[in-house]
Image 1 (tube, rainbow, N blue to C red):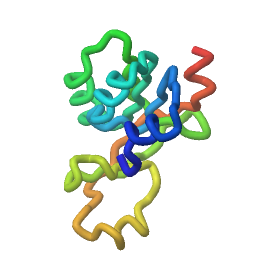
Image 2 (image 1 turned 180 degrees about the horizontal axis):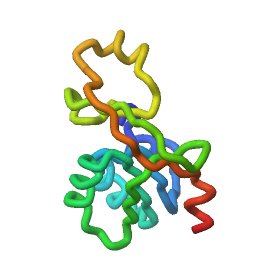
Image 3 (image 1 turned 90 degrees about the vertical axis):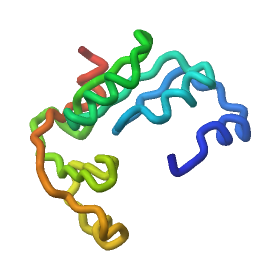
Image 4 (image 1 turned 45 degrees about the vertical axis):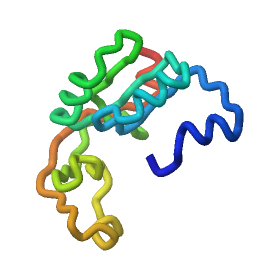
Length: 124
């Protein structure tokens, strides 16, 4: 995480009831959420290989894992996949500045993923 989640909670005395985590990757933040007594957690991760690792990492029945991207409409979309950074830089956006800032990261493949809106997920 760019910001330290635990420090933000302490600094602002936050009482968080739930988290919708978009781009969950392998669920690295899960332990911070549980440590802070956040029981309502939904992880969205669209990349199938990454999602499979997320499923293996998080076996908590209170946590919802969703293998979809979130966006502005419901449709199939092409995802730019990279492997140099463990898939953490994969994105539905075409890389531009990212390539300049991190020249060692290469987007080597595309994967079609399902994108949904948060509203449509909540309705269903």
